[in-house]
Length: 69
Image (cartoon, rainbow, N blue to C red; front, side):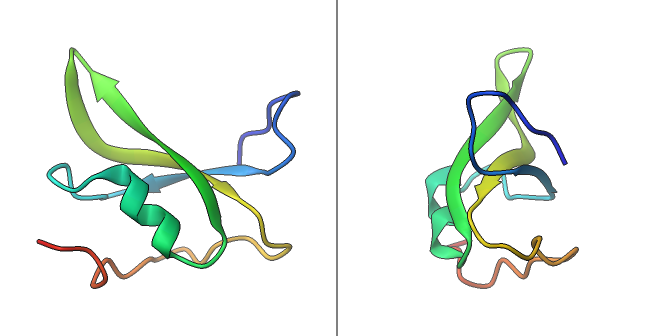
């Protein structure tokens, strides 16, 4: 878990997020407040950082069945 001084919500790394899907769709998961995609060498990769607004941390596994593929 990462925390920044200006962020009131804890952030978590979410791996295996489909590259071809808009990361803003992750806000459809209860608890996800905000998201940010990682870019490496100018190309998006399959990791996003989410800001979490629930008291319990996110589950270690997220099913992406709500995303359009």
